[in-house]
Image (cartoon, rainbow, N blue to C red; front, side):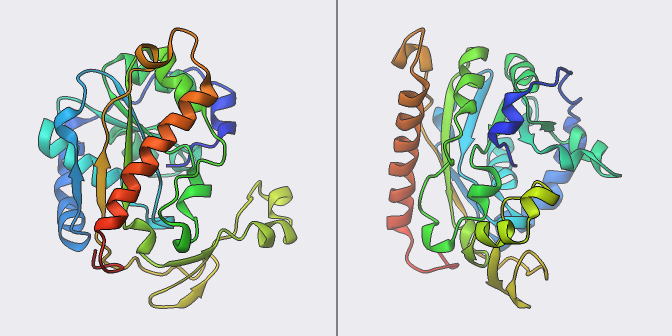
Length: 273
């Protein structure tokens, strides 16, 4: 889910969501045929996943129908069960309307430092996508590039809570349709940044409507999605008690880029994997 720096800059104190493991298990049971069947998902590297609280930092793919969280959660819960919650730092927009309670009970929490800290210190696994909408709508021709648009708040979240940072990368999601452009110029020309605080107007080509600028909504193709979970990073052990955030960020992104490059080298055909 989207976690731009603006979401990190002002903390809104409050408890983490009351996660409902029973409901989460039922939802995952319904999603599993889609994730394992339609997207033929794989999650690798969970054998080295640390105990206790951990911050998973990942690239974000798939536009409106991003599958990163369901793919990771399916693999994680299959391996570790439902005693340990997976939380996702998310944009406030999903906590409005009739579905807000559903999202809270299945592990989605508003993206701010207070919530991240509480979830991590409780022993939960917290997933964050620093690139947010900038990343999830990157052009398909740049699908194998790690780019958080300079956002680094995730490092402070892991450091403050004293938990390991776990890089993870996914491939395949950006082939759910052909993403042509983030549409930053178009959004600016239409003054969406002034009228709606919207800085992108993504342009893509897909099924069944062809060309789309968010609307009409095309359906995701059955692209194979593979996620690689990398070795955990102990920030203090590797970078000291007063880490240089820029250095840590560069290292994390380099680890992720190497892992994504290896996944890309394995991939033989678009969509099919």
